[in-house]
Amino acid sequence: MKYLSNPFRPGAGHPPPYLAGREEEKKEFARLLGQKPVLTNLVLTGLRGVGKTVLLETLKPLAIPKKWVWAGTDLSESAAVSEDSIAIRILADLSPLTANTMVLESETRRIGFTSAAEKQRAFLDFDFLKWVYDKTPGLASDKLKAVLETVWTSLSANNPDINGVVLAYDEAQNLSDQADRRQYPLSLLLDVFQSIQKKGLPFLLVLTGLPTLFPKLVEARTFSERMFHVMTLSRLSEKECRDAILKPIAQHGCPVHFTETAVSEIVRCSGGYPYFIQFLCREMFDSYLQQHIGGEINPVVTVEQTIKKLDSDFFAGRWNRVTDRQRALLSIVAQLPRCDEEFAVQEVVEQSKKSRKPFSASHVSQMFAKLADSGLVYKNRHGRYSFAVPLLGGFIRRQEAGGAQEHAA
Ligand SMILES: Nc1ncnc2c1ncn2[C@@H]1O[C@H](COP(=O)(O)OP(=O)(O)OP(=O)(O)O)[C@@H](O)[C@H]1O
Ligand SMILES: [Mg+2]
Image 1 (cartoon, rainbow, N blue to C red):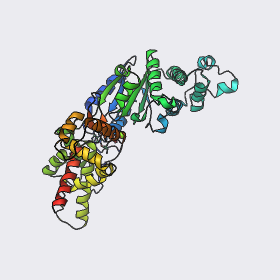
Image 2: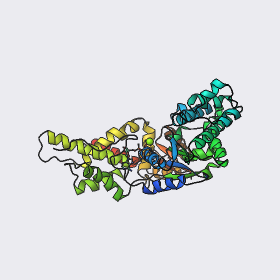
Image 3: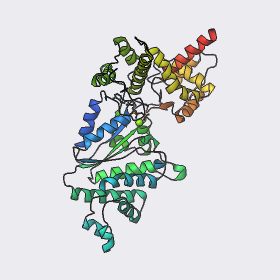
C-alpha cells in the first residue's frame, strides 16, 4: 500500500490536515485588522473541541502580511491569577518581537533612562520593558499602560509601515478577578486596553475560550459589551464536514477510501463537531490499515464500532468523575428534546417528575452550579444551561441503553 500514514489529527490544538469552513470568521478578523483606530476587539468562543485554537493559529498568518505584529500564548491558570502575573505575561510575550528595536532617545529621556551605560542597552527587550514597568509609579494598570505606550512609540518610529500589534490569548476563560485576594487581573486587562485604544494606540486584543468567557468579561466590566465582537464557532455544515473528511484523503493520494455510507455516518455521528470528525476518521483509518496488514483482503470498519471507542476515550473519563446523583440528573437532561442546545431548570424539574426520584428547582440549580465548576455544563447569558461538552446527551443515552441491555441480559 503506497501511503500508510494517517492524516487525521484529533487532539487539542493539533492543526487538521484540512481546515474546513471558517471563511466568515477569517473575513471578519481581516475587517478588524482594517480598523483605525481600534474600536472593536475579538472574542472567539465555542464548545470544547470546536476548533478555537486551530482557528486562532490560522488568523496569525493573516495578520502578519497586513503588517501587524502578533504576540500571545495560552493563558495558563498561573498567568491569570494576579495583576502582576498577567502584566508580566504580556511583557514576556511582546519582548521577543521587539527585542531588536531601539528605544527612541526622546523616550529614554522621557522615562528617565539617563546614564550612558543605560542608554546603550536601550532596546525593547524584556529587561527594559520590566524596568519601565517597575519604575512607573501607580497601579499595575498604570505600569502596563506605560510599557505599551513605550513599545508602540518606539516600534512605530523604527518601523513606520507597521499597522499595529495583535495580542492573542487562548484559554482566556482562566482569567478571573479574585475579590477575596484583592487581585483583579481580568479588570486590569480590560481597563488597560480600553484606555490605550482610547488614546489611539493600535493594539488589538483577541481572546479565545469556552462559552463562559464572554459573560465573565461583561461581569468584570460592562463596557466589554461594546469593546468586543463575539464570534461563536459552531458545528461545521454538511458540506464542510465532507471537506474535512474527504479532502485530506484526496490531497495525500491515499489508497484508503471511505464509502459514501461511511462518510454520511461520520457526518451524522460527529454532529459536525471537528474534534469528533478527526477522531472518527483517524480511528476508522487505523482500524482499516490494521486489518489490511493482518491479511484481511476486504477490511470492514463501521462507524458504530468506532463510536464505542469514542465513548471510552473521550466521554467516559468525564462521566466517571460525576457522582451517582449527578448522573441521575444528567440522564434526565439527556431525555429533553433540545438537550444538545440548551435547557432551563424548570424544564428539567418537569422532566424529573416522570422519574422515580424527582428533583426540586433549588436542588437542580445547586447541582448545575457544581457541574459548571467541573466543566460539564455552563450557564448562558439568558440564565439557561447547556452542555459544555458537545454531544454529551447522545453519550448519556447510549450509556442508559447499554445499562438497560445489560440489565435485561
Ligand atoms: N475547521 C476544522 N476542520 C477540520 N478539523 C478541525 C477544524 N477545526 C478544528 N479541527 C480539529 O478539531 C480538533 C479540536 O480543535 P481545537 O483544539 O482547535 O479545538 P478547541 O475549540 O480549541 O478545543 P478546547 O476547547 O478543548 O481548547 C483538532 O484535532 C483539530 O485539528
Ligand atoms: Mg483550544
